[in-house]
Image (cartoon, rainbow, N blue to C red; front, side, top):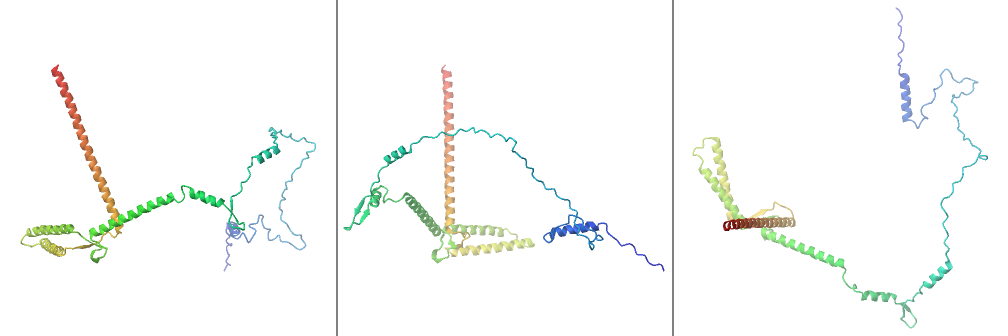
Length: 319
């Protein structure tokens, strides 16, 4: 048997690229542990440091240090100094002695403060404060109520009046709706007799209409729709009869409030609605009056034109 020959070991072409990328990645995330990537290639493994050889250094090119070049300016002429174009301000001759004499002559002497001796021992008190208090008391504004307090009083009185009017409107609304009467809960209200009568008349009218429809039914109920129609009419008529008896037997009917808002808001909305209706009526009345005046003006103009035409015709006939 011939010996088996192994194929050469596989080596990737991109091994060096992978190593370099790995080094860059490590240097990026572990930069605080190392000094980063090397700027020069590492020495070969066969070229190691042998015994007796001096320490090897990398051949780093020497950096050139730029030195400043100083020039001697002893024999050179310097640039001329620019001339000043601004003139020096003139001094004002001021005699301070005369100025001080004038100031001292103009100063008025300090007036002594009025004083009063209260006790025989010579206790002295200044009267300046008392004189100031007397002037304040003798002034016209002393003892008067400030203007801002008068404004606030008027504002408070107006707000109080508005609250009282609102409370009166709420009480009137409760009395009108029968809310809280006979110890009942405020969430229910009593309908008035006019509304009760309208309700009763409506129920009776519905009963009459349904009874007419029931009497017009055919004698034979041989189909399912006819049977259903008859049963439905009987149920509706019975329910209406019960409702009519219930309304007739109870003169006072209470209903539950649907609008659970505070009564103040309800009354305010009603007042607004009444005000808008009033304004609407006033506008309609004004429009009607305007239309009437417009029609009257047109009639007067037509009459004047007719009169002018008659006058012209009379003149022509007389001529």
